[in-house]
Amino acid sequence: MFGLDERLKYHLYASYINLGSGTEKLSTLAVGKPGSNPLAGDAYLFFSKDRTCVKILRWNIDGYILYEKRLERGTFELPRFKPGERWIELEWRHFFMIMSGIPLKYARFRNRLDIRM
Image (cartoon, rainbow, N blue to C red; front, top):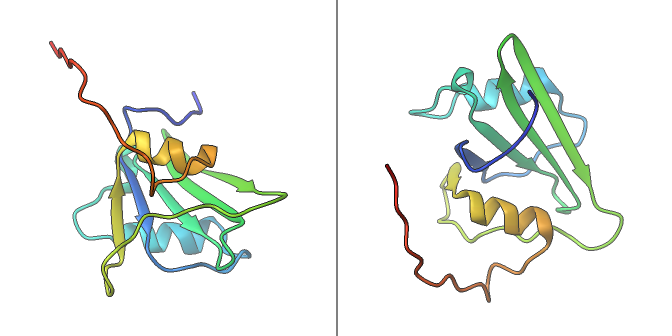
């Protein structure tokens, strides 16, 4: 089944991509990430230079799925990262905020009870 949820790992590419980049180029970048395994189903996020478009690459059983979201108005807000850093790992909640247009700068998370079995 296609989908993005809290069970996945999200990796943000810290450089901008050309909007014409397709599955082949993006999968080459994803495979080049140290310590990652694109075939495990992780999601890889790539943003355009003007931050109005995001492409998300994910492996699903027998091939890559390429999601694309293009904003009609506004831009995606990205987290800060260290110069020279190529990849940033995102938590689900940060990914969700970026996709929903929630400002990361002002977001504060309260401690919640987390019971895992």
